[in-house]
Length: 256
Image 1 (cartoon, helix red, strand yellow):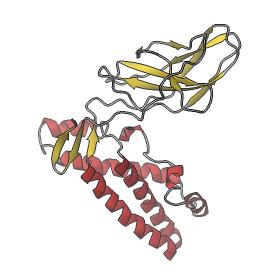
Image 2: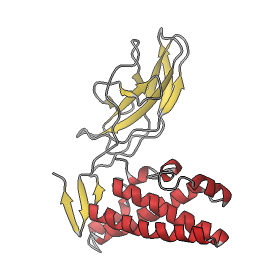
Image 3: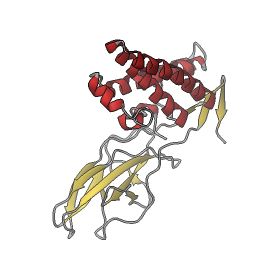
Image 4: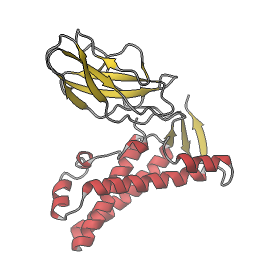
């Protein structure tokens, strides 16, 4: 599962599952959907932070630590993802109604406002998942070439961070790179987070999910070079870390 600080839990394509005409309405009403997605992420994040602070001592080390780390250790659950989508649609149709004072938009606004509140309550009942050592989604890999006999090839690449206990981050965005004739692909994953002790390289030669290429995690700062034999068969990247604990109902529930 991705972390809440990795980016918006949903994109415009995900919103079309709820509202198939959302893109056309956004165009007609001149509403920037990306801005609404980011605003919803900020508001959901602040709401979750308020809940987490309430579950700590109001004074002392716990409260200060929570204020310092914010929501950087919060995992996006399925209920939270739905909450974010519905809250985005709530704010979207609020703006659409205020633009036109159109009753159709008002009804949509009221509907998603209620659904968003319900989704928030469901998220809190399910629990806010936290990881003890968060591994943010990596940024874009850096590419290069090494000497070899391989023909020019386009590769699809993702990278993940790995912790000392074997936990793995959500993968970086799928990025392409084309080598030149007589070279081998090299990949570097820069800017490791504090909890990372290594990284994994995933590579494919098409838009299908890349496969793991290294048998053991690469050392931080080390360069991965694709074998001359080409892309190896390996597992696909996962969805990210699973929570180590949940905050729900006023108690901290440990996993396992």
